[in-house]
Image 1 (cartoon, rainbow, N blue to C red):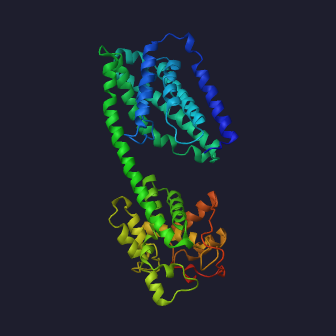
Image 2: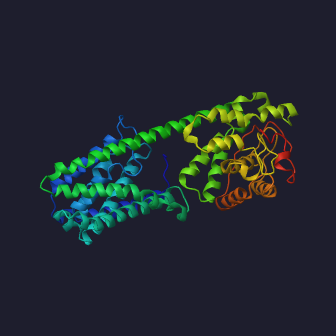
Amino acid sequence: MEAVSTRARVYVACVTVAALFCLLPLPGIRTPWWAVALLAALYAGCERAARSRFVGISHPAGTFYPVLLAAAFLLPAPAAALVAVPGALLSHVGQRPVALRRIWRAAQLVLGVWAAARVHWMLGGRDAVVAGDVPYALGPAGAAVLAFCLVLALLDGGILAAAERVPVRRAWRGLVARSLAPIAVHGLAGLMMAVLWRSPYGPVAALLVLLPMCVSWWAFAQYHRERAAHQATIRALVQAVDIKDGYTRGHSERVGQASMMIARELGMDDERVEVLRFAGILHDVGKLGVPTRLLRKNGPLTPEERRVIELHPEYGHEMVRGIGFLGEARAAVLHHHERLDGSGYPYGLVGRQIPESARVVAVADAFDAMTSTRSYSRARPVAVALEELERCAGSHFDPVMVTALVEAVRRTGWHPAVTADDAHPAQVPPPGTPVSSRPGAHR
């Protein structure tokens, strides 16, 4: 991201100015500067280690927030906020502009830690930490963690709205809910660090709290490594299909996107939304087993050729059957050409016999097929495609899935890509032609 919008730069500048105001009282406060230096060095070192070649992946919820929250529980607000600055300014940044991103991260953390320290101080949490009264300290610490989480979520939503022009309501949706639980765990570790720091055992005992946090973080990083490997597997399969069937290049990703839109409209949880995205992306992987000449044929297929094409869901299911992380996506690969009235394939399932994931992908697949130019048909306008889906709802498609897609597209829009070579002319089917009657509809 070489170019950053003026809106985003102004937003970052405003947040940075607010962070500097939080740090202004530093010269006049009495604080153990050795503790500030030690915590700042510890946070910076942990951040660097987290992005080392040995680990290779950073924790999305903030690798060592326990150190920052311990500072919020131990130090005056400006000094606690200062702890985050060296680690943020020295952190590894994978995208450009590097300096702007580092400044943004530093300013965001300064405001978050400052807010947490102020809330903790106002609720009397400092006295509870000094006295080692853990039960009483939990209340102020919990409020401080909540303030920290809210500030980070507020600033993250703001940068999304400013930099990527995400609608304001969508920019903040779910940010607090996703981050509160992991930050609460980090807050508890930070509280234990602060209590031990103030105990007769001193800072050395406090550092021991980080050991189990490091182990749990490392395990989390391995999970993300495995997830990245899953994504690479899926990309390789999809690229193989795109290479073989050039006319539908990009189709798989768009079906995955449409499937995700339907799932979100239906209120499914994030994990299931991701599985349905996988289902949409992989729905046509069985085309690897179909002769290329049939996939690229202009005009209608013969009955024999159609029977060969109709084997691709079973080919695809065989290919992905052993990939455990796909879950119900495997059923979608096998059954995405079934129809509610039983006229689909490969097994002629009826109504609710068709798995829900397959009913989602069937609608997403038909929608993208109608709104994309192929070797055998020109793209239809989005509005016409939605009308056609509504007309076929109840016979071919699940009305619930159709309604979900219609609502999602009308609210957020859809920008279909042309996936065929325009050198291949094709006749646009009239709007009244059913999806199932279009030439090559089963490809």
